[in-house]
Image (tube, rainbow, N blue to C red; front, side, top):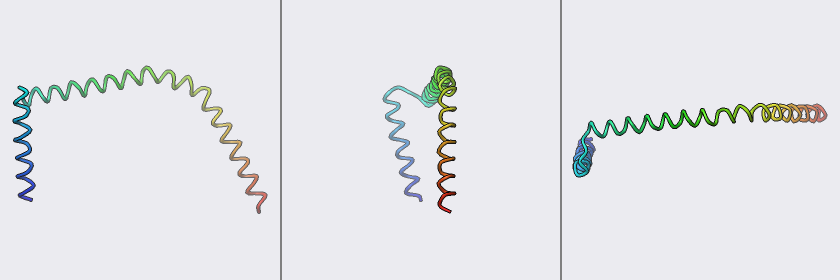
Length: 85
């Protein structure tokens, strides 16, 4: 347990030295993470807005076909199981 804590502290030290070599600090790093997370959220929202219209348009045709196909296969299975009894 103590050995694991020492490993984590040493890893933090090494990463801190590397980040300092790139002239960054903890606040700047946190701001970068938050900004990029916000960009990912915005991009996801834009993708859903763009693709959602097409999904709904396609669903108007695809879902009834899938439902009819499901009903036909359900009726066929039911008839075949009744014939085996």
